[in-house]
Structures are given as C-alpha cells and as structure tokens.
Image (tube, rainbow, N blue to C red; front, side, top):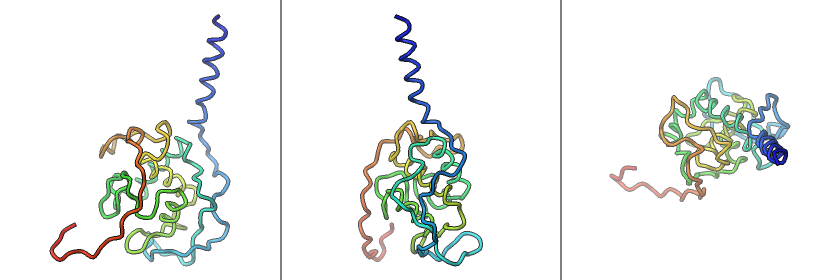
Length: 190
C-alpha cells in the first residue's frame, strides 16, 4: 500500500523539475545570422552603432517556459533602465507593459524587434548593445508583466519594486492593437 504512494510522489516531484531548469549556456539561436534588419530609431544608448540588427527567426521565445530566465529578464530590465521610461511596467514616458493594450504587438518576435530595432519617436534601438540572449530574457519578462506566461514561470515581486501585484498574480490580459492616435484637440491634455 505504501509503495504506490511513494512512487506517485516521486513521479509528481520529477514532473516539476523543468520549471527551475537553469540553462547557463546560450540556447540554440533564434536570430538570423546576418544583421539584415534596419533600425527604426536613430536613438541608441551609449555610442551609436552603424549597420543593422538581427531578427527573430521564428515567433517563439526560448525562455517563456523557464522561470530562472524570466527572473534574469526582470533583473536585466532594471539594469538596462527599462523602468526609466516604462516605470515598473505601469508606463511613464514609454507605454505601460502591464495592460492588455500593446501598440505594436505582444508576440515574442515583435517584442524582440522593438527592443533591437527600436521604434520611431521614442524607443531606442538596443540591437548590438545588448546580447541577443539577454534580449530574449527581457522579452520573456515583459510578456510576464501582463500575465502572458504561465503563473508558475512568472517571477514574483522583487523587494525593491512594489508598484503592483507580482507578475505571477496578475490576471491574464488579452492584448489588442492600440487605436491609431487622432490629432490632439487644442487645449486637451493627455
């Protein structure tokens, strides 16, 4: 009677091991070999780099299922000062990342392009300034901010940040494209 219970407990314990798999080497590349994509923004951090940037090969983040990599993305988000424009995900100069309204799209390839190529009139081009592997970790973390990853993969709130509930406790958002901006009305504030 005790043997089946022990065996069942071992099976359940082994099934949960992948959640915390920590890959310390760069996964098989999900980017093009050539820097063929043009930058959409002339703004760049530090010294401006000439040339293009790499693109995503497929619309699949290598880290969406890896809790350790998502947490690394959270650390990199702070280190590269993404919160300087996006706040702690609630927006500021840059758009919020915690809601269901995404200006360019919430899929991994689009987020990778936004970070590496930048966006006109705002988002700098970080391609070549941040290693592609770290960009993918940031992509996974940004997707976790609006509940697009499984709850057991998303990191919980860091002690230094308390702008809202932890990522793994936020309700899942349904991303929808942002409506085109209309011309501002005279005297109207945003």
